[in-house]
Image (cartoon, rainbow, N blue to C red):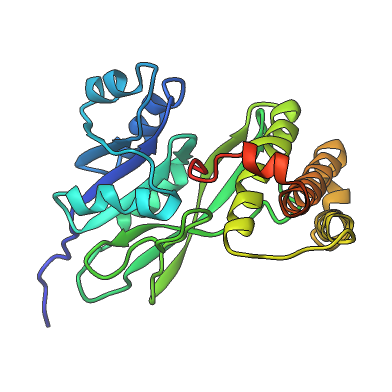
Length: 269
């Protein structure tokens, strides 16, 4: 019988930032409860994000933004430890997550990733419907065996043996309902439309309506947004607005040379 006590490997905490002065201290405080190293990959903040990160003991790496997955893979390559816990600046570990992660025995021959449930918030309100929960995300992973997909938006860790943990992290996605709609109608839909145009995707006059209505029905009915009151309805409407506008903007790029020529397709990120 082997009575050798189990040991676990150390963890490096990694965050990507751009003008996250209001969030970075809370995020790093959360990570420091389970990580022995903190790394911030900053893409050109004009506020004091970097100074605050350094004051928290983090090492700051300056890297112009490459897109979501590519940027999130920069920090792990510079990490001292092979196990990495990657959070966005507006995310926090719950006390439950801290306890569960501390209890893990991280090894080189076990699972290559661990997923946490994510609580998505509008303001201080946790929205459980609309597909916003449990929203499992792999955030703790062995960087020697896996990494984020090298996609420029909505990247995820490509772990082959991921384990779902019975623990949550909190994601303060939107400060208020206004931000929910302005992000959907602004940079989210602009970015998606540009990406689709550069990929050569073709749409017609029915596409904005079809995709917008489909997004609303999926969020409000199939993902039970109607059970979350005004917040559920708002999430469904913002999803519909985002879907409608990204296809409407793509159609505009296809049809209107003046609009297309005025757009800088080299600046998506």
